[in-house]
Length: 181
Image (cartoon, rainbow, N blue to C red; front, side):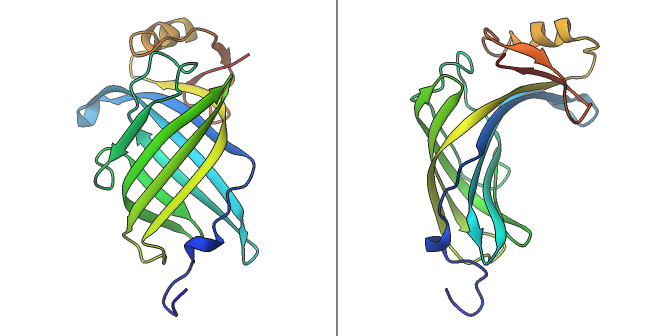
């Protein structure tokens, strides 16, 4: 690790507790049409006593349903075009590109391989790679004009197979959440 770097990629050891979820979202006031995207969060062992995690958010991964993710792959060539990749360590550090592969699935858990590159905020490592098991935490539906869970689930069915999902309370209170019972 150089003097001007905050983090050395060799210090990033995947830890238990990773999660993945979906978000069906729109924002008609700014012209964002409904789209289903996925978030993947890989925690790492603490570095210098501080939490570290890799987040890949807003990644569109077309799939027949949350139960058939194995073998899927997606990439993003520029930050927020479409995915946002960040390493969280002493702040939020953005990475320009992301490559994600779902290697296998065991029920609600998936094993992913992720590589992010292009350190936009000078965190230190130009590239960060990780492989980890992640637990499914559900699909959030946050759409304009949707006023009940039945409508939310029906709209979700327009984008992916919602089979095996049941309504759960959204801890944020702003969306409908459907998770594995």
